[in-house]
Image: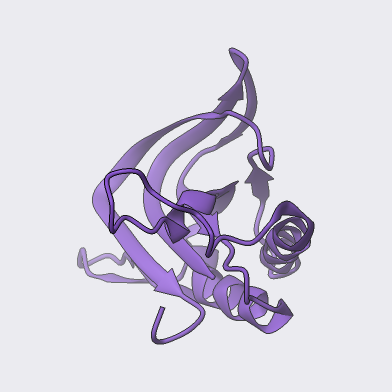
Length: 148
């Protein structure tokens, strides 16, 4: 599983011109599920997201956890994180099919909620417009597997 985590002051998702999700200060998470991912990968990535200490302390150092910063989380499915770009036209055969990806995506969402975070989501498989105001900018790549 892969996640691009961006620290934001706000982020939102719109579908067909209608806003469907919005957060304030927190993380915009673009989440990709690999065809070989299992529940352990979802648990690991959720733990990494919710424990990522990238909010500034009183000295301006990235040392504060998202929980202590009062962060919200917006999670958006992003199968293109598993794009094979060896040619000019990307292939997506490493991305999990929806029947596997949706339950794992929902598991990450639930794990973040059960850790005490307000969580909003995009709509899996929808054509979404995602907007965000990056803070820093701070953008972190996470993977549930060391070699991924």
